Amino acid sequence: MLRRLLSAVGILLLVGLPVAVQAQSLPAPTGTPILEMSGNITNTVDGKVARFDMAALEAIGRKTVRTSTKWTEGQISFEGVLMRDLLKTVGASGTDIVAVALNDYKVKIPIADFEKFDVILAYRRDGRSMPVRDKGPLWIMYPFDDNPALKTDLYFARCAWQLKAIEVR
Image 1 (cartoon, helix red, strand yellow):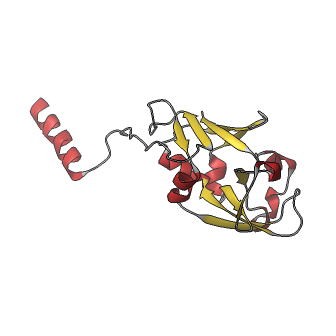
Image 2 (cartoon, rainbow, N blue to C red):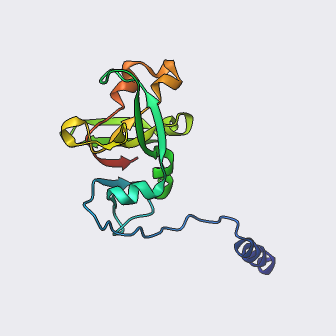
Image 3 (cartoon, rainbow, N blue to C red):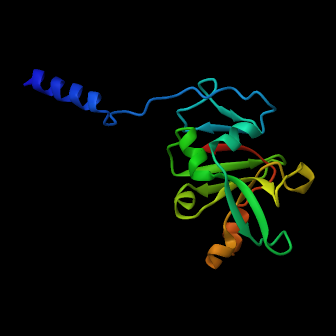
């Protein structure tokens, strides 16, 4: 009986069915790190945190969200990485993130938002990098114009700008 069970487990491993999530090492940034991720993540630079420079974020993927916000005039084109793709990259597991800005503003955001909506971590605004003095270099952005129900104080508060860190809980 035990021999059959061990054989079945071996077959599952051979055909590639997932048995357990394997931690992976991420490459260390070669440029200036602009984002640090910690918490419930399996893929890190040093076993504790994941650090990203601009090139590493751009390599994950690029999504454009064209939307208006309460902080800008007219529709703006924001470019960045989908939050759900960023979380996959670090092997995140949990129910929430805590986004932390350069001024230590913190906001808790349900990870479900990132599955339900195309929320991005924006690193460009109208094709240009965003300086710190203009809410950069990173800004969590919801697609407000795609879903008018998002235009509430609850979702506006989740749009942390000058983002420096994300903790997965």
